[in-house]
Image (tube, rainbow, N blue to C red; front, side, top):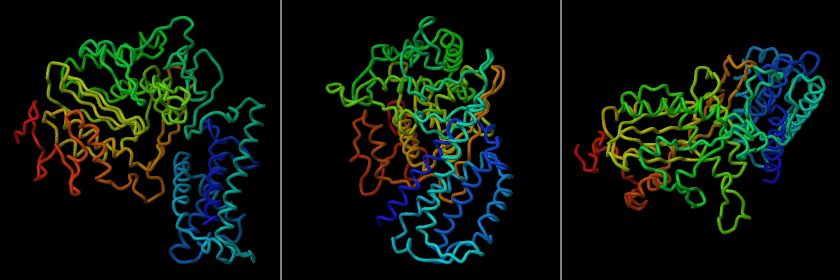
Length: 519
């Protein structure tokens, strides 16, 4: 047991070192030479080929009690063959394969006993007379990762002297996002990344990062027109530390240009579509909807960063730690699409569902929920409901499109809308993949920022969502139904879950505006 824990820890440390070594590089940097004939992409492929071979050994042992065959007489032959093969694999796919292989290897390690790790096998290379063990293979793999991580760091320091690439930033948060580093010029798009140094202060624009010594303004997280329409100014939002803040106080720093040009135009688009009703709103460009709800979601996070966990004891720290906010780095990057041209290549980062709900012509017409750790968001306004997962690469859209189409032409009661949001939020917590992106930032403001998503499935056959647990889901549903006095005990009984969405024959349940059953 001790050997297994040590091996897992070695691999985990080496993996983090490897990702740190690559952090902040652009896709073009992978074409630069590192060794005599190998560029950085070749090194990446080399690391992948040995990590994948280690995984094959473990899986082969579990199935057949022997090591897998590398089909190579020596490691040098294996290196040449794999390098030639992997040069034909696109960079994005290679990164996804490496990430999936590491996850799969760490997933199978717990099943090995110390006896399994110490069992002696013939050498994995045909022309070798030495013997080996799984323990030796895995330990060497951890060393192999660490060695190449160190080589890449040294190479980057050498390239830094030539000013061709960005140096390794040891204090920057780990991120699988690859960002383009271009020379300074007046036409360059400055990619503001507040997560690089965790700068969430009120002296910089939250969107573009401009210093606000002059040209300062504030942006209401929930726009003024929305607060006016539903009389929200003095209503309270309950934050993570159970403290409350009024909608009018929920503001974030913003420069005049971002506020009056980019965000004002976005707000006008959303407001106009809302006034025209559900049919018009449902036909809006999803990117506009994503930008609008992302601004509100990120704005709430920004505010919560400055609030203590316990108002009576500020020494306990802040409500949202820097470690938590690192997860929202890509969300902020995609929010830049408000002010610069963006192109998502053959994917969308989000799953967005637009639903029709009952109208009340009073304060009941508005409601809002978010799931910070699941990156989910819901808002209901005057007969229009938006439910979104902000960073699942469209996975839930693909899974639930047919299900959500069942509600076309049906006006949902607020409790039904909340049940759908509970479904989506809990499902989001079950995702066992981390969306990973390659982001290429252009040199000129007129050019597009290109975003490529690495495949969620990767090379693993494991489903991207873990199994659904009815009891755990019932706690989520109880949370979003609590305003109606409904408790967990009312929802989950004898293994059965209370639902407001469908009847016993699986037909859609129709509720009127007052919540009375009509069909």
